Image 1 (cartoon, rainbow, N blue to C red):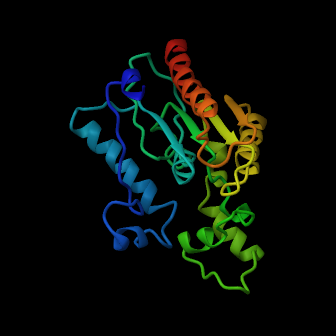
Image 2: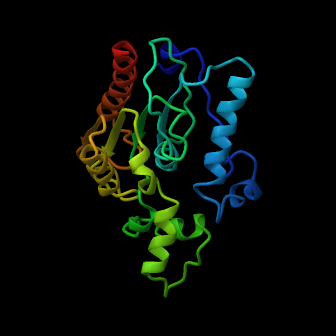
Length: 227
C-alpha cells in the first residue's frame, strides 16, 4: 500500500533498533531523542544526495517510539502531488523543514508523563536515568524528560498530522496522543485524531488495522491532491 503511494519507501534502522545486536540497542540509552533523530535525518539527506529523493517532498509515518520520532519533526510548507514517501519509524518538530505531513500511531509525546505505562522503566532507561524501587518523577526529572520530548517542539509544527490512538493502550497511554492533538489544535495547526475502542498499542484488530491503514493512505493522498 505504501509503495503504491510514493516513489521511495525508506525504513532506516536508527540507533537503538533491533537487528544489529544488543550493543547497538544499548547505544541509544541516554541519547534518546537526539541520536535516533539524527540517524533518520542523515538517512533522508543521503537519499537526497543520491538523487533518489528530493528535498521538501517527504511524508513520515511511525508508531510508538517511531511515533515519538515522527513527532520530533514537521515541515512548514506544502508541496505538489508528486510526493516521495519516507517511512522510517521517524521524526518532525526538531527539523521543521524536512517532512510535509505525518501519521502517528500511539506516539510517545511527553516522556515525563509516561509513568502510567506498563513498562515504566523504559522512559528512565532510554533517557539515561536510573530506575529503582525508590524512583520518583521529580520536577527536575520531568524537566529533563520534557526537553527531549516532542511536546517541547510543538510550537514549530507546521505540517498536517493524523493521530491513531488505541483507547486501551497500556504502553503509551491514550492521553499522550490526545494532549498532542489539543496542543496542535490550540495552535491552529491541521490535525485529526482517530480513536479505536478496545484496541491496545499495536492497533492490530482486523477492523482497526484496516481503518488505520486506509486513514493514513487517505491522509497522505488528500494532502498531496490538495496541494
